[in-house]
Image (cartoon, rainbow, N blue to C red; front, side):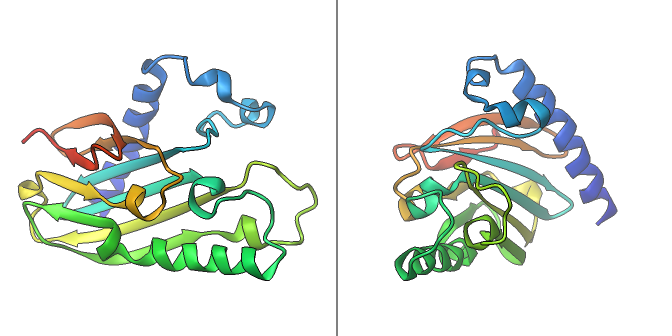
Length: 190
């Protein structure tokens, strides 16, 4: 487990350098708040961010998305319909078998954490118009050395997502890709 934590730290460093070198064309979308938080991704409707760390027979996936992509709105859920949409999204984001298909090896979920609190928390002092939903997934695999690709069905379940900007790192490789409705599979170049 310690080596996966080291790999995650290495992934974070590598992903920061990759995103910095990927160009500044997305940086113009940052809000004033983002200037104070350099780690936050730009908030663009239709675009979600996904980061993966692969190693030690485990896969960790971190998803960050504007709430609009997942539930169709970004305000705090006040009506029964809005609250139901948020709760349904949490259930769907927790159904890992429907969202991820591992190719080359078998992987089973170890943990799933979905954060929708920003849409339900009525005690916020300052209402933000840019609410995010995040999820963290951890899988145990038979052999990550055999993992050739992952099929992501997030766009199929959440049609407001038009693309998923993906960054990944393994013990031997790293890369970036943009997943769309026409390309839901992330290949690891093995």
